Image (cartoon, rainbow, N blue to C red; front, side, top):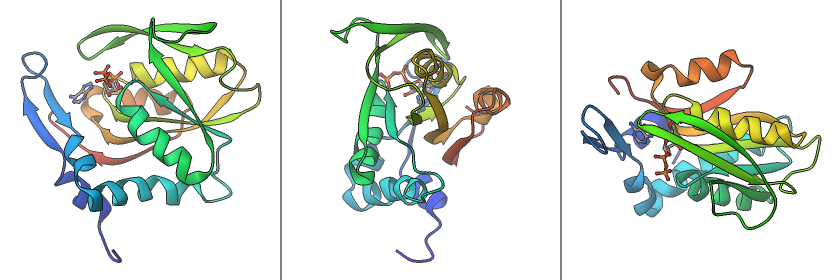
Length: 184
Ligand SMILES: O=P(O)(O)OC[C@H]1O[C@H](OP(=O)(O)OP(=O)(O)O)[C@H](O)[C@@H]1O
Ligand SMILES: Nc1ncnc2[nH]cnc12
């Protein structure tokens, strides 16, 4: 699709559900993006085209539980790279490192297998959405505990009013997002 405004196109396929899962939360639902094969391809290609550039090519792709798995694994596959899952606590069977963080609604602990990345690896960290930035920051810390570095954080949606993307950038993490939503 030449001359396509990807941001505008993808925004049309993100569903907003008010007051879910808690009063006052505008939930940005990305499942319609995945459901339509043409839209899904535009979405994945937006990431793949960026990270196939040799200057931006990572060594490995990490995805954040759970919606980051959907994107991250497909992007890794298309780039010919390995994929590592950063999971909510209690799901990974081998030795892990862990990190606890706050969400827009609640708190959580994430884990990563201790052998998931090698010291010195440049990791692309993928999720569907950045709200407070707590999830992506926790993922970055886990990868750094293992001696890897996060070369960029990538997400479909940024909710800039929650301040997460600004905090992540201020911490030194470059970010690539496709659609901004104000009025979270
Ligand atoms: O920037 P933050 O404030 O950390 O919020 C963003 C995170 O919240 C959502 O995941 P959620 O924890 O709801 O889990 P899910 O992917 O399993 O639905 C979303 O998919 C991100 O991972
Ligand atoms: N407003 C929101 N919509 C979708 N996922 C989220 N994760 C945290 N906040 C969210």
